[in-house]
Image (cartoon, rainbow, N blue to C red; front, side):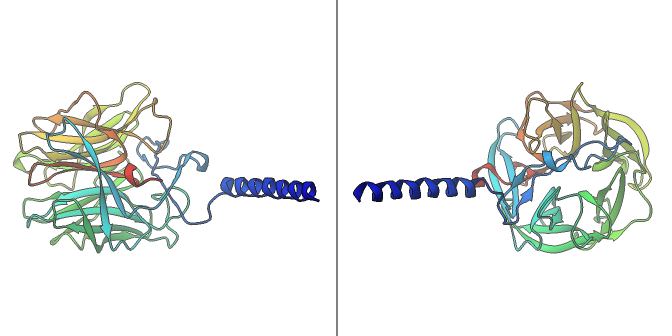
Length: 329
């Protein structure tokens, strides 16, 4: 009898282990967000076409961004997490930090309610929202303030630029075009007529240099292209700013004025050595005049869609789409 009982217990134990293993291999049913990936369209401008569901990796939701932080002007970096309290969507991607006139840090993002697929590809309610959050502590943490701009078709990658008269202009990607919207307060934006870049490339970044000249940077297959304008609305082609190396892709330009002089740009580079498609390499480039750029040697780290902020205290922060490493399970 004892042997029969032991045999029965063994059978039950093995069955339980098999059942647990089977459960562990099942796909979780709770909603998860996917890390942003991108590829070039046939036109060479749209960097955010879907790579295919088999290549998109799932990740847990996190209400905010991973942040690369430097206290020595970008020589060394550490990782932190910037949380956005009161988020109205499941995720925020495409970060664009901006220092308001009162010293607050505003953070513009594409809000996403996707639970599967690329969070920047399409929205369940067919409404695409650029959200704005505010920070009172120099960009360490944020509280969502609401919707800054929205459309019923695909918009991504906002970038904020202060105009000479104090207004704020958002340059926004729409496929391989760039539209813009302008605001008096940084919280409610009205669309400007027409497009700033008509099929010359999307994913914009911009700076204003002397004499109100505006350089607009967009992504193309060959690299990051530069456009120029005297009014920030009507742009002409001005050549390549950063050329892609053979076998690599560069995109997501985020230029800002360097308090030490000149300008600095954060951008991403797709590195073939990084097999995980969730992670791109973040790099920096410097410019004296805002037109000619010299990439720095080395990299900041990994992340996608880098948004560069140089805070009032001199701290450099690069917000990157995705869950911070210390928050991953």
